[in-house]
Length: 142
Image (cartoon, rainbow, N blue to C red; front, side):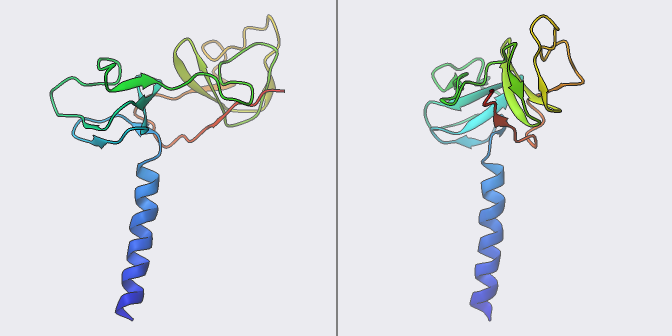
């Protein structure tokens, strides 16, 4: 009985750990491993090496290029940079002018319509660094 309870507790702890380790907001005082992904100032970064973000050191992803690099902007299946003429589905993630956005609804980015993420708030939601709960998927396009 006790072993079963321990296994259930461990399962819950591991499940929570998996959620916490998804790309969330960068924070001071956190130990990061190589390959960890974080959002900082609307951009997604990948840890180049393991380190502790020492409080007060100023080792933000934007200020510490020896620790962080911008996440690749192009996925193998068509990329994640926003472009006119593409079809986007709700939840698609794109980068535009160095910031990350999530499609609020399915739509075609009509050429010349000005439906870029900065101009069309009804179509795109900005993903600020303090909103790690948004778990978008890369845009596949048409």
